[in-house]
Length: 225
Image (tube, rainbow, N blue to C red; front, side):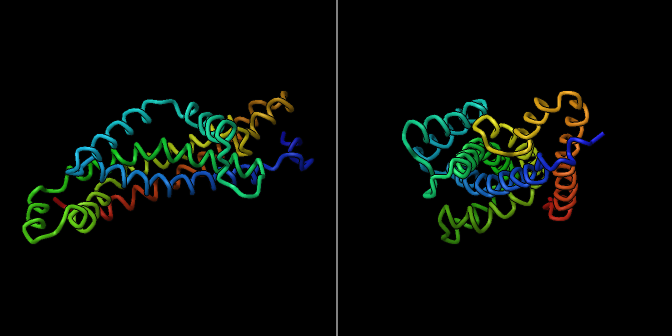
């Protein structure tokens, strides 16, 4: 049934490795940028709150495909921003895809964290301010550690969605799993079902253990109220 794989023409493992890399770098970037956005959303500075609110509402409601294409067509082809010094088109496409994925998924990280911040009793922040701590000290030392512990499960859902959304990177030619699947279906039209099932199984292997692991972590670190 899988004779088309024996020729070595299709590097399935390599394509999934690119998907894993996209997921990892985008997840780290989304967590950092999303945390910054969440801090802006709860900041006492009106300008920062306004920027965070507008960014989250606009980007979250923009299709991911549009954001990825904007990163490629707008930054690279129009403005000449490559994010790379090598000039390699595959590397440029990969980095632009990571940038687009970060810009989009950071909004969901932000909202998850903001919901976690709202679960922290107000009295704790007030007590910290009474001791002379500033806003960022209260946020980083008291509020965010508890917020992260309470939103492990929602962040796991964002990570799983990010893993599946890496397929959008195929729109700008990033050689990840979805692009290879498209090429294989076009070439091996007699095995469409097998190819689809194989790639579906691959994504299940990537996402299911992640969800189970982070679900276990969520129960272990949950804040007892």
